[in-house]
Length: 126
Image (cartoon, rainbow, N blue to C red; front, side):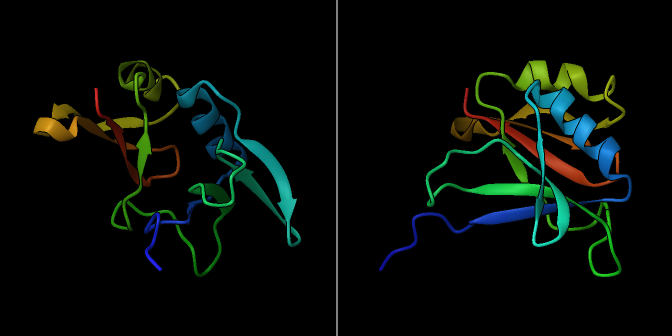
């Protein structure tokens, strides 16, 4: 059996959960849905309802999951809206670490630091 996606789920730690939910809801101009899962409040990023879809959440940090600019890097799909997302980053309390640049045929990426100190990538093919 061949893997459809290497990534199935990701989690972004937040020292201030509400601030992180507001940050990502603002930059993506789409609400991060807050819900409880297994007794923990999590912020779920928009995703398809398909069980094969890649998804992720924002989780309150704990001793095993701390915000960090040195951690694993997640790249968010910002197809067709990369410039708009970048325009909202600083207003939402984040920082643009690497402005948008082209990766040849792979498209465009930028790096931002979120409200919690995590570095994440933004990607758009066009």
